[in-house]
Length: 193
Image (tube, rainbow, N blue to C red):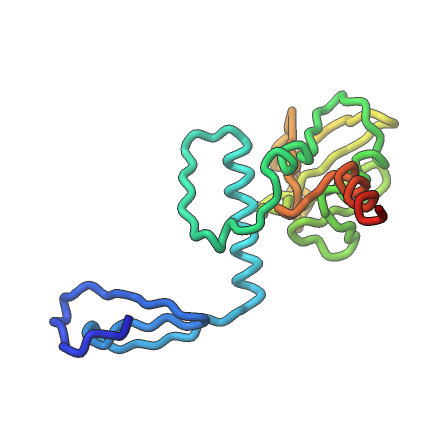
């Protein structure tokens, strides 16, 4: 729609037209043109918010309301598939460190022993530290004793100081586009046919 030609009083509500990469307020309100930068940092923040919202919904919280445009949720994978990929850990659970590392890689976490960021993990002996993809103030530290999970704690990233000892942790996938290995194998078989 073209902007109206007649000026309106300053108290009139602002209407915003959105085109490809710009927002334009109609001239009747006050002509204003702002370029929206396609910035990686903004996309990173949006991704973090989407993952945090998904985590909140799947955690059973009843106080979550989602308001989103179609483009925000377009092309997301299967919610059931996403939920099946959540890594659930408890102290006392029999699961060796290598199995946990494979599960983290399967849900698109990256190993980075030097520079921890969202969606990464590091390994130091029998200790695995995970920076959740949805962000947060603390790392998840998983301590192993042999093939058993000995302790799970939230720790401060800079000091390593324990913030809280946890009885359970659910590590959500680092991306909405996770797919199980079974589905990948089925897709590869179908492609080969």
